[in-house]
Image (cartoon, rainbow, N blue to C red; front, side, top):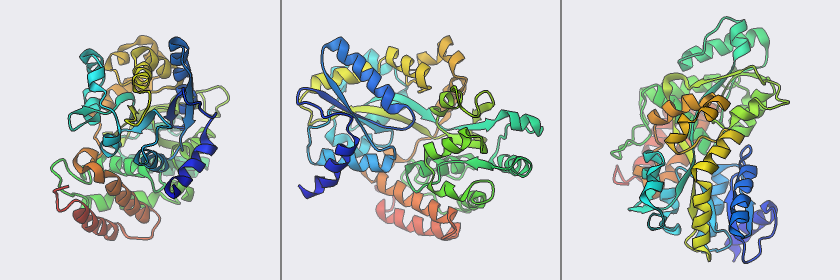
Amino acid sequence: MPRLAPVIAALAWLCLGQPAAARLVIACGAVGTEAALCREGAEAWARAEGREVALVAMPAGSTERLALIQQLLAARSADIDVFQLDIVWPGILARHLLDLGPHLPPEEVAAHLPALIANNTVGGRLVALPWFANAGLLYYRADLLARHGRGVPESWEALEATARHIQAAEGGWGLVFQGRAYEGLTVNALEWLHAAGAGRIVEPDGRVSIATPEAAAVLRRAAGWVGTIAPRGVLNHAEEDARGIFQSGQAVFMRNWPYAWPLLEAEGSAVAGRVGVAPLPGGGAVLGGEQLGVSRHSRQPEAAISLVRHLTSAAEQRRRALAAGAPPTRPALYEDAELQAANPAFALLAAALEGAVARPSAVTGNRYNQVSAEFWNAVHNTLSGRLEAEVALARLDRILARVGRDGQW
């Protein structure tokens, strides 16, 4: 099967052990401590159930991870039973995933954030359970802001001014973010648009709303950051690249997910004790998070569902929150005093998740991946100086009108 050759090669490289036929296999992400946390949780389930489980660590990049999963599921492979899924993938992968609804008591489903359950329900089928939630946050060097008499910026304009001021005095860089041409850039740019009231790319009624003067102004401003307050290399930065620069003390501000907090504060971190965290300027958080779904091609569906229920349980989400700052999908856990004390970002997250804007994956359905790719390419072309913002957005508008059949999707 020639189409599977690159998949098999990738798995051979990524597998942390060759799973035996009777083992349950779960594929997890590898951003930060994701793989280690997944292994710990899965192995705890295996010990309790008297079973064996194997972990496949997937590529850190969401684009590469989705491509790998799509190829495996399209080939009806039974090699992996449980998949970690980005929040925008349930609609894309739904026909390959089991309906978990009939296997779960209603109170277990109702314990999760309603927005996440709605996101994971496709055609009336609950194709995944929420594992951890996400909303972008602004990390800043509290010591540098205090030294220069600057407050935490509440707008991107204020952030730019503060970054330029401190960078001129201290050296290094003012801002790092996720500027690579991938799904992370879609999230970053949608946050900028949302903060400026410049739409959601595709509105809930199916209307494409990207070719506006407001959106062009947002992208022109962001393009002005590259090579000035942000390193030129930001055009190839994903989450871990940005964290590496910020954690080594080379930037004043960083946009990243909540997972970064415990790593920044860990023993040996160059910035431990000197970092603050705040909502994104303008309050433009985009809803994120990871889900767990069971392949309909699994030969052990009951065991796979049992593993998913364990990993999404309150006890396991609490463990992950304490160990690595993974934000729970169960609202009740945000009232947990020990969690609040361990991670100050949780107090911000509870409010951020309530007001976060979703990517247009529900309205665009199977075409979301194409919409997002066209969007991030338009943004990347603008940030890199290859196209003026107005030109890139006008071209994107024409492409999305054709992809979306003029709003019919």
